[in-house]
Every structure is written in C-alpha cells, then in structure tokens.
Image 1 (cartoon, helix red, strand yellow):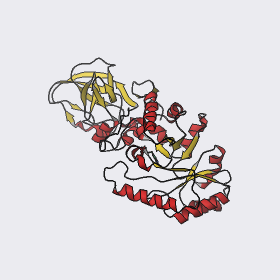
Image 2: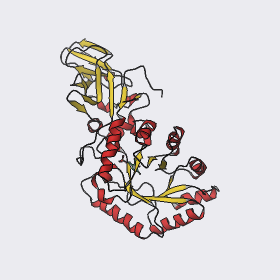
Image 3: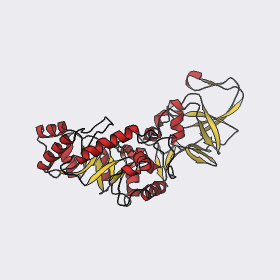
Image 4: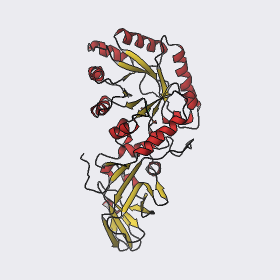
Length: 367
Ligand SMILES: *Cc1c(COP(=O)(O)O)cnc(C)c1O
C-alpha cells in the first residue's frame, strides 16, 4: 500500500525519545549487559531503518523476525549484528551467510532438512533457541541442544548464542516465570559447551526480572516507550512513548437531532450538534472496534460516532472548529494524553498490536 503523503494523517515518531528510553533502560541493567534492539515488524510500526539508525551507537545489534527484515537493514547500510528471532528455511542459509545475518536454530529436524538440502553451513553464525514453556519454537532437552551444537560446529557453523523466551514476564504471578527460568538453568548446567551470549530477556523481563538477565537483553516495546503489561504492572521508571498518530479535520458540519451517521446508521444524534470528519479508518489500522473511543481536538476529548469506515471517521465536536484543525488519535494535546495502551484497552487488545496495525498508508514522519 502506498503511503498517502498528501493526506494530513501521520505517524510522528520522536527518535530522541527512543534514544532516551534505550539509555534509561540500560542505566538499570547490570554493567556489561549487551543490548539488542528489537526492530521487527518495521520497528513496531515506527520504521525499522530510521529506528535502527537512531540507536545504532547505543546497542550491540538488532533483532528482526525474518530474513527480509534483516536484509532491509543491510540494504540501508547497517553493519551491526542482526539476529533473526524466527525460523528461516535451510534454503535461505546462503543468503544469511552472505549478508552476515545470525539465525536462530530451534530444532534437530531443521538440521536434518539442511543436510537433505545439502546446505553448506560453514561460516553460518547462529543462536540456539530453547523452549522452556513458551511453546512456539525451540529445543526442550539439554542433550538435544548438545547434539545440535556439536553437529553445527562439525558443519563449520559458529554457535554464538543460546536463548529462551518467557511467556508471563509481564504478569504479577511469577510461578510460571520461575518454572521457565528453572528449566533454562537446568539446560544451561547440562551443556557441554556454553555459547558466549545467553539471553532470555524481552522488555518485560528486563523491567521486572532484572535478576534473570544472563548477559544480553532483547528490547522491544519498552524502547518505544510503552509498558509491556499494558496497565497491569507499573513501570519501575518512566519511559516516553515515541509515536503519535495525528490528523486534521477535513470536514465540519452542524447536524440536526435524529440524523444518522456512517454505515448501518448505528449513530443517531440526540440533539443538534457539531461533527467533524477525520481522514483515517480501518485501512490505516484504526480498528472498527474503536467506535465510541474519544480522540482529541484542541485538547478536548471527542467521541468517534458511527462506524469506523475504511478511510474516514466522524467525531462529535464540542463546538465548531475550522477545517484543518489538528486531531490527535495517539499522543498529547494540551493536558490530555492518549497512549497506544488506552487505544488497546478500548479495543480489547494490547499496545503492541495497536502500533503494528498502523498500516503503510500512514506516512512516518520523524522529529
Ligand atoms: C518480539 C520479541 C522480543 C521483544 O519483545 P518485547 O516484549 O517487545 O520486548 C524479544 N524476544 C523475542 C523472541 C521476540 O519474539
């Protein structure tokens, strides 16, 4: 989808806020901890290349979810370490090697497939994923990890890291978290050889379980200034949300009581009132579920009335405003702030999803 740059709707990204967040988080980590900035999914909607360039000198490398995302960074001239967190097909190994991209290997079956496809593993750099309870990818037994590492080394690969991922690091009940940690420690203790990088920490683990960081963290949502738990756990120190979603009124009108608005006529004005139309809709990632949510005009909350259309929403205004008045859907206007977490709470989802859904139609503008 082409970015609609002639329309006033924009995602404004404060790169300095991301830099500050990274520095703040690092100042609370154990000395010597390595930082990998997670810039998968276009840096959670903030723009992968711009974010990676902004934090380049602050971090030890980047995490992405697949080879295409890794190559996007390489094409932009980024030479730092890049780790792919997901599984890549063995056939893609030559490309990973050619671009010096580290891959995650998560099963012995993967190695069998690589052998069957006669993939040359020499000069491959990889981390091994251990599944301690997340249940997506990874090996579960130390003996399998040992076998995999031995085979990889025999094939000429370098195993430079071992990782796992916690399922409940953002929850107040730590029972399951501790079970996962125990499993990971048991596997570590049974390793024949310990790779140099051992990492288990996403944002939530870095914020609330600092004692479990081995020697590297994978920082995602917190770097963008958001609380990984939503409103569940409070942040141990303040972070600044980096992304604002803004637009302008493109149409303003006075309507009479009883007039219906939008598809299905789901809203009927109870009295005569001012309404404004904003050029954003579900094609921009502004979910239909957000009917009734309040956004900001002139520091005042304005309810979205009627259904969210593909490209437009209608809001109730406290008074007449001129066309071109600024509208804040995420961010600050006057004393009022709408966070991605507020949007997520209303839409019964999480702030991660709200950010990732902002589509390519919305141009990213950098401060
Ligand atoms: C996405 C991801 C992260 C980052 O998670 P945040 O909660 O955004 O910090 C870390 N590790 C893995 C394996 C991931 O998939």
